[in-house]
Amino acid sequence: MSNVPVAVVTGSNKGIGLAIVRALCKQFPGDVYLTSRDPSRGQAAVAQLQQEGLQPLFHQLDIDDLQSIRALRDFLKEKYGGLNVLVNNAGIAFKVNDTAPFEVQAEVTLKTNFFGTRNVCTELLPLMKPYGRVVNVSSMVSSSALGRCSQELQQKFRSDTITEDELVQLMTKFVEDTKKGVHEKEGWPNTAYGVSKIGVTVLSRIQARLLNEQRKGDHILLNACCPGWVRTDMAGPKATKSPDEGAETPVYLALLPSSADAPHGQYVSDKTVRPW
Ligand code: NAP
Image (cartoon, rainbow, N blue to C red; front, side):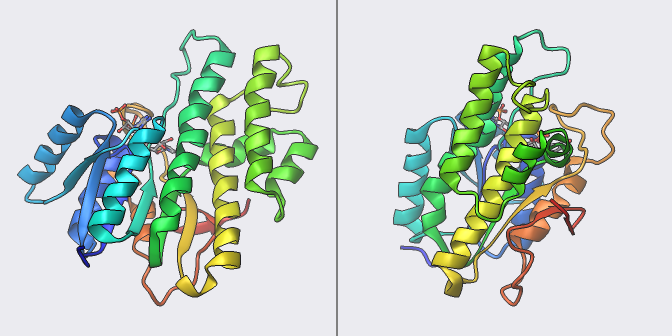
């Protein structure tokens, strides 16, 4: 078994994820895994970074596929005995002019952004080594969408005692409410992406709390962040940041020094803790 530290970035064949891998290859003292659901897109991205003189490794990972997540989990357990850095970056967003019915957009978006990310956490968080760092890439849209939820929902999403099961029930209810055409009446904002990212931010707060309760002595730090508005296939060419600039806050959180005991359980943008 290798004692080399190991970092994994989900959805890193392009966009912000690829830029996070690039930065980690330069700054993280260990093996860095570029992962992609499609091996050929992943290998092409590895080749691109190799041309830049960097040495990322590759592993397939589709966060919608539990078998794929478990294959990565078993690989990391066997080869490294765990994991030092996990960046949950993979995500999707329908374009504003997409004509897919809202309930379809809700189901598909929540499936990857919330349930897929949660499944990765369920399988990989138990592998985190002491002083591990976990970064869940959320979005500023999570806080604007939170502000557009009913008071009752806002109270639940800001609660310091909400459980993972309760969060899963709420995310499931959102999808069901869109199918019944009652999501706005039930206090939800009209954004599937926004609700999925509320889920990612709240999940991070819950997971950090559980780490405090169950693994306090391991000094693991887990945070949600927004990369900013970044020029990628998702956000388009008008966005203000380059992918490398978008990677800065996730990479800062992934490389928090072992002496740090904060931030933890926070929502961070531009390397600054924001109110939730
Ligand atoms: P992007 O260029 O569209 O890249 C998204 C990445 O996620 C791609 O590698 C994609 O793989 C991967 N992915 C999607 N579904 C996946 C799945 N089921 N399993 C594994 N990988 C999957 O988008 P981006 O802008 O870099 O976004 C990265 C993250 O930042 C997302 O979580 C996004 O919500 C968040 N974010 C972006 C912005 C922005 O302005 N760009 C702002 C706030 C937050 P494929 O190539 O196979 O599709």
